[in-house]
Image (cartoon, rainbow, N blue to C red):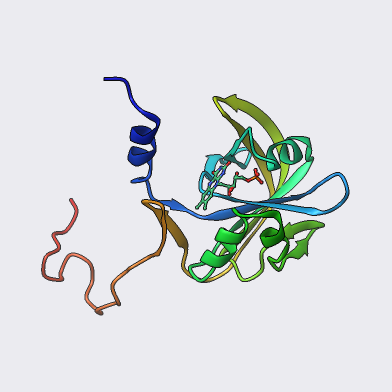
Length: 174
Ligand SMILES: Cc1cc2nc3c(=O)[nH]c(=O)nc-3n(C[C@H](O)[C@H](O)[C@H](O)COP(=O)(O)O)c2cc1C
């Protein structure tokens, strides 16, 4: 039986992702933000990251024309930011942004990656946007996650004081 679009979506909805906001300035100098779950590390030397952007979205043309963009990795309390940056234009304009080296970033997040555009690669109905990370800032905190079409947070157990491997139910990795 051929794979349906729904079957594909359901299978990929089981892949848990971090949630980020890609941002750049459009030709009028206005911020363009879009929520992405496809951020991925690509290369260490040179330092490259990628994300996949839908070709039929309004942001596609803007990011493909941009020389630089920023990626903000969202913190666990920023689901509202993620929803707004995936929604209507008016909602996106209501997201508070800061400027880092002239690029829009979301404050209070886990990390900011300031990138120069490195390459655009066609990938079906998406474009793979590859950026060279020129500067990275990392802040303490826990990530916002996306799994089965909903936002989640990391549910790490509270530290017990016992080393991993000695607590009941754990076996030491060989
Ligand atoms: C958690 C989450 C992850 C998303 N990941 C992506 C993504 O990786 N690529 C993408 O093109 N759109 C993604 N979207 C949808 C976009 O945020 C956005 O709604 C869509 O691209 C249309 O925006 P545009 O018209 O500005 O292009 C995601 C939405 C959510 C809520």
